[in-house]
Length: 457
Image (cartoon, rainbow, N blue to C red):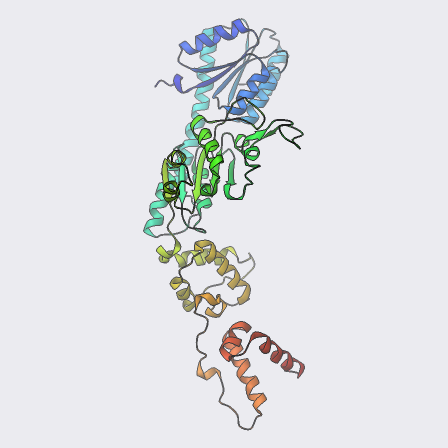
C-alpha cells in the first residue's frame, strides 16, 4: 500500500465541475477522497468520519470554508486544512492562516502546486501520528496500567492488554463481579490510539428495554411522546472513541439484534428516522456470565457472541492470585489515607486472615474491607479485630495476662467491670467482638458501659 493510499482527504466545493476535476486528479494520485458539495455536508461528514486533510473552498452559500475549518479543528484537532478561493485578497489570506489553515491557495487551482501542498501538509500529519503512536508504545511497554499485581496470570493479562490496546478489534472482557473489568477496559482505552476521544461505559443490565433504543441510537424530533427535539444516541456521541458494553450478558434478545447490526455495519438508525448514520467506535464488552452457556441455552445470540469475541481477556478471581493480596492491601491503605495522615500498616495476623479468605466479591470487596478497617482503627495499624466477622479471624483468645485474677476483696460487679474492660481493650474497642467473647449481646454490653460512665469511670 502506498503512502498516498493511507491519506484520507475531504474535498469541499460548491462548484461541482471543480469538485469533480480535483477529486479525479487526487484519486489518480492514489488518495482516498471524500467529496462534499457544501459546508453543511462537509461538517456532517466530519462528525462521522476521520480525515487527515481537508481542502475546502472559502466562499460557499450556506457555511463558508472558515466555518468548515473551525468545525474540523474542533472535531479532529490534528487535521490540516487547505483553503481555496477565487476571491484572493491579502486580508482573507491572513484571516485564513490566523484561523488555523495550513495554507491558502487562489483559483484557478494549479494541480501540481496543490499536490505539493498536500504532500507537505500530510507529512506534518503523519509525523504527528507517528509521535503519538510512539508515545502509546512507550506507555504500553512501561506497563501503564492501574491493574495491580505480580502474579503470573496478572502479568500475562497486562502483556495482553498492552498488545491488544494498539489494535482496533473488539474485545470481550470476562471475570467475576469485582475483578476489575471496567478497569481493564479503561486501560485498553488509555493505551489505544483512540485515547484522545471519549470513553463511554454503558451498563446494559440497567437499561429499560423500552428506552434502550432511544438511549443508544438517539431519536428524531417527535419520534415518540415527549421527544421535543432531535437527540443523538450514546453510540453516536462517542464517535471516534471507545464504548464499553458492560454486563453485555444482560442485554435483551431484541436489543442483541440491533447491536449485531452496529458491529457488522458500523451504522445506526435513530428512532423515528430511516437514514443510516455511520459511526466510528471501538466496542469492548464485559460480562461476569458464561456467554457460551447462554448461547447454548438460547438466551444470547451466537452471531453476536462471535462478533464480540474477537479477543477474550479473562481476569482471574482474587482467590487464584492470593500472592497479590499484600500488594493490593498496601495500595488501598495508601489510597484511603489522607495526605496528612500518618502511614498505616496492617498487622501480620490480619494480613494472614485476608490471604486465607476466598473473597467472593474479589478486589472490590478487599477494597471495601480495607476502607472499613481504616475507619475503625483510628490512628493505629489494622488489627484482626478491625476486620469483618465473616473472615473468622477476630475471635482470637484474649491473652491471660491481660485479665487480672478475680480480686476477692472486690465485689462481683467490680470484677465484672474489670473483666469487660479488659476484653474490650483486647479487641481495640470493638463492642460487637467484645460482646461475642463475653457471651452477652451488644445492647447489654452498651448498657453496662453506660452505667460505668454514669458511675464516674
